[in-house]
Structure formats: structure tokens, C-alpha cells
Image 1 (cartoon, rainbow, N blue to C red):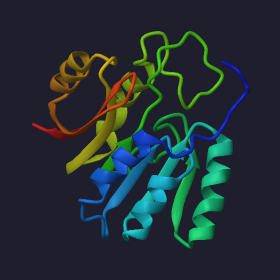
Image 2: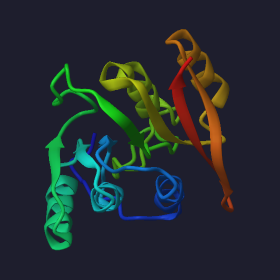
Image 3: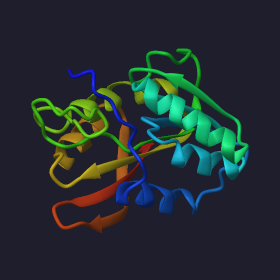
Length: 185
């Protein structure tokens, strides 16, 4: 893995997640953003009175996000973390959301985009551990593209006692973005 890191700034996929968050009552909800990048969505949630924790593997993203949150005068708990590793194992959230790296790659120099050889490495890592941090009545919003094998995601979730529905889709010139809402069955 390269030492070259950049901060993922808001793009179409970010705004698609935001469009779903706009329709949610976030006030007083414990929210976790995995892979916060620029902090744009965490800041949005904090402005809507959520109690926000934001994590990212990239320390430059955490530094950038903290600065943005200070400018916006919102309180967010930022942690550098490889997925859920830095969280208290007992900590639970009402909402967890993730706009994962999903591009197929053997070695991209931009971690925010590199989804591994099948484009699913990071998604699978997330699916392996999210449930340990989700409140019983909580839910997950996960951005998923059409080429990241939605059937495999469905199979993994089903084995864990979860199901999903597609809340939103957006067709871009080279991919279809889906926002999945994941809940316990």
C-alpha cells in the first residue's frame, strides 16, 4: 500500500447519501460515519443535532475534517481507525453510514477509492463488523455500486440476520450508485 494519501472531497456519491440523510430525524441520534473523508456528511449530521463519531483510516482526512468541523462550530468525535478497531467494543449507534472505496484495483494510490481486486475488500470488511456497533433498532446506510455484486452483499447480510432495501439510485456515466438501508430481520 502506498504512503500517498489524499482527502476524499464531496462528490456525486456524497450528495446521494446526503439526500437520504436529509429525510431522517437525526436529533439526539448516535451516528457513526465510517470513512469520513472531508467530514462533509458528519458535519451535516452534527448540524442536525446528531451525536456524531467520525472515523477514517487516513490521518490527513481526520485532520482536515476536524478543521472543517471547527469552522462550522459543530462537535464531532473524530478517530483515526481502520474500520471499527479504535471504537470501544461496547459502543453502539442508532445509525451507521459508509460511502466505501469501491473501485476495482490492484493498487490505487488513493485509499479513498481503492476497493481491492474485486472492488469489495473494504465493503466486506465493513459488513463483517458493523453489527457489533449497531443498536438493536438501528440501521445502516451503505453506498453500493452495481459492479460490487449486490447478491453477495445480500447473502452476507442474510447470514447475519439482516436485510436491505434500495432507498435511492443514481446512474452516472460509468456506474449506478445505490443507497442501501440495512436493518435486522
